[in-house]
Amino acid sequence: MDSRPGYDRKLLNILRTAASVFAEKGYSRASIRDISGATGVSLSGLYYYFGSKEELLYLIQDHCFATLLTRLEEDLEGVADPECRLRIFVRNHLHFFVANMEEMKVLSHEAEVLTGDFRSRILDKKRAYAGALAGILSELREPEGGTGSEAVENALPPRGEGATLRTTTFVLFGMMNWIYTWYDPERDLPVEELEQTILHLFLHGVLTPPAPDGEVRLPETSRMGRSSIWRGG
Amino acid sequence: MDSRPGYDRKLLNILRTAASVFAEKGYSRASIRDISGATGVSLSGLYYYFGSKEELLYLIQDHCFATLLTRLEEDLEGVADPECRLRIFVRNHLHFFVANMEEMKVLSHEAEVLTGDFRSRILDKKRAYAGALAGILSELREPEGGTGSEAVENALPPRGEGATLRTTTFVLFGMMNWIYTWYDPERDLPVEELEQTILHLFLHGVLTPPAPDGEVRLPETSRMGRSSIWRGG
Image (cartoon, rainbow over all chains, first blue to last red; front, side):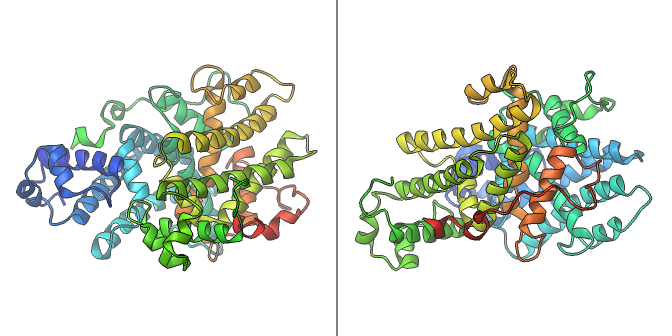
């Protein structure tokens, strides 16, 4: 995608606005004419960037997963401790989605719309991303490197050794992703406390009260100020 | 709804088939004509039961939540221990949704479609259901009855005392509800093991290995064989 001529701030703006329109109206009801109205870009201007509404949805999804993966890799760089790696994964994922709730809704609701090559490219990115979390969880449970890592390479097989790892991975995604249905950043816990609550529940469970001084916190990174995928570029 | 004449097996069959059509095509793209084609019931036959596509969606959602709530109350009857009540809630919810994955998708994706009176009636049922889980979690954390129960009566306020309870409640719903995006009953862990895995993670966390003989199991109830909401009636 980055190699396209004109993959620039204008396209990023179109993707962001289109994601809002899809989140509001639903992908199937929204038309390219609606996108044109919302962005102020002419139909021919839009078709310079993509050939169809499906390609536009693909570009939104691709940009989201590519940004998530790139930031994750940057943040994990040089960090070896599995629990610390898990905290970085959860922080990256939550901060990204709280800053991009509409994109999250589009990713969740329109996951099955893409076909053919678009579909398989997004599936590859999704598998890589879920595989990264599964890899961390596998290290967390078996620091010496056990059966888990093979399961990860097998792209989370539902049967056998990998079944519990696969379940655990998607249960953690559920803890985080479901926020798009209920979390209101203006009224609910601040995202840092949401992150601590989810991490504590996942690591220690609800029966273990959190330490009075809170969880071990990661050093602040420069991530915090640039969580929207549409700002960084 | 139950007081309507003709609220019968034929309507239940229409609701089940309509839920499949909405899950497959999306609510906005599906027409009453599609429902007629899929059910084999004429348009006038369908309009005997509901006045609009929106009322049909309302009836599906209302039937789901009413069934969930009724079964939950039956199963919780006479059970006092909070952890046991939690296990019953999770079992009821998961078994219901694994048996009704298409309805789950419709409930998740079309949550914001209803308007006016339909919307407020479903919101009341949803609040009652989320409030039931919050009440159990509040007892679990403060068995003597602390601040939690006031928060529950306040319908899970996002700020103050209830904020963490509200977060914990919806994080657990996320662990369970997200299964509609990944869980395949034919290939993944059997629903009983899914239930044990989620309960163990939520109660004890991933860092505590499950006991070799598995979790304490609830006595089998008659629930297991009649999980589909469309069978019981």
